[in-house]
Length: 288
Image (cartoon, rainbow, N blue to C red; front, side, top):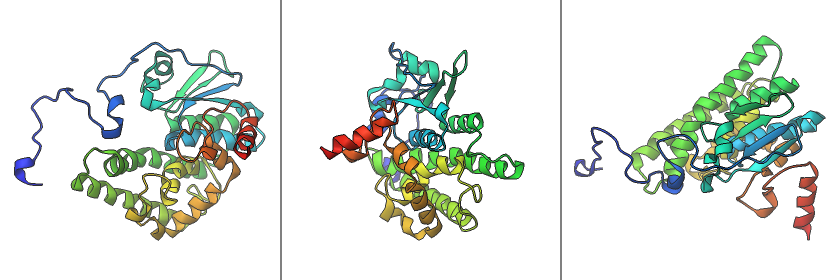
């Protein structure tokens, strides 16, 4: 970039135009609701308000894994939040998550109901509530939490960094793409080295560390996000590939990935989930 075209930041930044490429219409520098809209409440203890982005998939996979283990108390209603339409700025949603990001959840199994927001917090809440996917041994529990929080800190560089500038920005900026590509490949190498040592991120057990990381890095390795597999040469990370394929084959993961999904092939979409039979009904509809 020539010096003549270099952007010079003003002394004081002002919000004078939309920015954010594909998502410019939902970006703003202030919080709070933009309109009054109550959230629906279904029949189950857990009410999830989400969309099948990687962060949303974490939670629906967690619910489906808990149900697969026989925890009937983990039944949930999954309501679709269309972030492109600004549903996350409705007053009801902001009341559950003041940060206006999916996923957000209400636990109505207790009184008064408890709100839980941020995907990592929801995973930890459910793991502790049902005593699953989080080891009790202090060393193994800590290792699991290490990788859970690693994902929370690292994925913004993958999504908001690489994903935005590579796939969504209105202009492809060489510096930005190079910077975040380097970081994402470093992260993949971190995971690949860890998975050369252990079957799963926390050790020999499948845990919330895997449930948190797979929707981001597992799907990236399988070329399911950003259409960047060839660009990133994801096949080079053999241990990540093994881990990604193993988790992708889990029935609960396949179901969880469908919930609140509005993109991709129609057979992979279940816009809302209110009962386990919804998956069967979906299969029957596709067979017609």
